[in-house]
Image 1 (cartoon, one colour):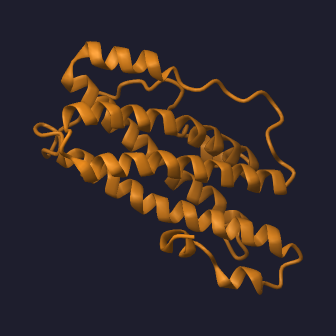
Image 2 (tube, one colour):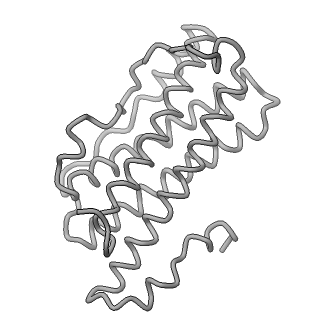
Image 3 (cartoon, helix red, strand yellow):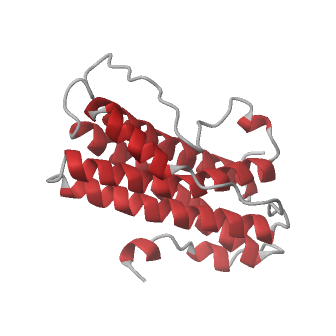
Length: 203
């Protein structure tokens, strides 16, 4: 286990007096992972902007909010839903994110081939989103709230890649910005949605 992975373990979970210590430990570990990835997602977004040139990063720049196949921002009504339903939406978004992050990495490999750290962060983000999604699904299964319906179709990444390439450099950069922003929003949302399940967490 890597140093990074080891840092996610919570030694208090094993000694908890909860009636369901294995479940509590799973929730704590998943929440810790979401909190860590929220920080990484912010770093990824900052790194991405730094490599796109003007007008990205300029004060007052407001890029067009391009639609992203298979993914959108959390709805305003998200916080009013039951916790299990919110976590099912989180898991679905986290499942959709890895192929989109991989698409952004491929586009950036063409646009910024020397941005090694950015490309590595994008690769890591895809893997981390996949891991967090699996962890959230494991929590839902342990709670008896797993989604028994059909799994959503993966985003049409090939079509998105072709469209981005045909549209030109600027739309490709905006698409990447949008995907990185959605990654940050959904891992942060997941962290918040796991909070009520922690002992002493918000109701």
